[in-house]
Image (tube, rainbow, N blue to C red; front, side, top):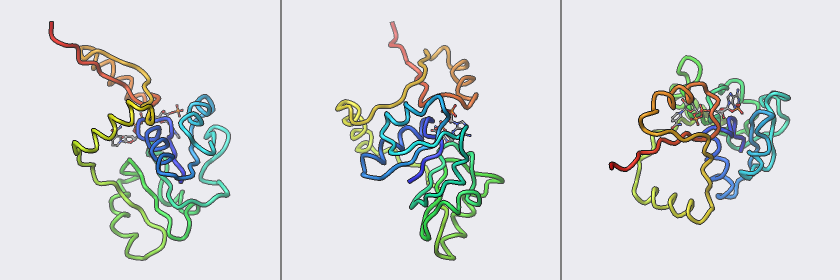
Length: 173
Ligand SMILES: NC(=O)c1ccc[n+]([C@@H]2O[C@H](COP(=O)([O-])OP(=O)(O)OC[C@H]3O[C@@H](n4cnc5c(N)ncnc54)[C@H](OP(=O)(O)O)[C@@H]3O)[C@@H](O)[C@H]2O)c1
């Protein structure tokens, strides 16, 4: 699999979970974060400041754009004949949900658009155990108190946060 945006909240979790599931992962991030992404378990890292990942010579079963900076059209050549393009974003002109309906009809390379996950207790428990055992390490950039939420949103909206921003809800005194 290839994960674009491997330093985001979704991308940094995806790299770790995919490695846990036994996938071979190529991750895309900027120069500054190559070591961080290697530390998450990526087998190969492409620095997007040095190289255009859409021109990579490898082909993949799945390309996950976890930062919404590409499109099916640009990534199609990276996919194996039955490869899947997944994105956490709607894509240019909101094309991803539409392509997810159309592309499976023709067979071959297709777009899958994730349906919002159901937050099952079992899943939350599983993550809690993985975090406690150190098997999954959420990447945390900054922490804010609840009364700093405007500041926190402003930071997230820069599009440059690394991993997650945590809002701490202080216990009432
Ligand atoms: N978080 C959620 O719960 C959620 C849910 C649904 C959908 N989404 C969508 O999913 C996308 C990602 O959200 P997110 O919260 O995981 O992360 P995010 O905060 O939007 O992503 C920021 C990360 O993307 C990297 N980045 C910026 N430009 C890039 C580029 N051109 N190529 C590769 N990486 C780049 C930045 O790292 P560098 O500075 O190293 O490039 C930064 O670490 C967003 O479009 C969001 O709307 C998010």
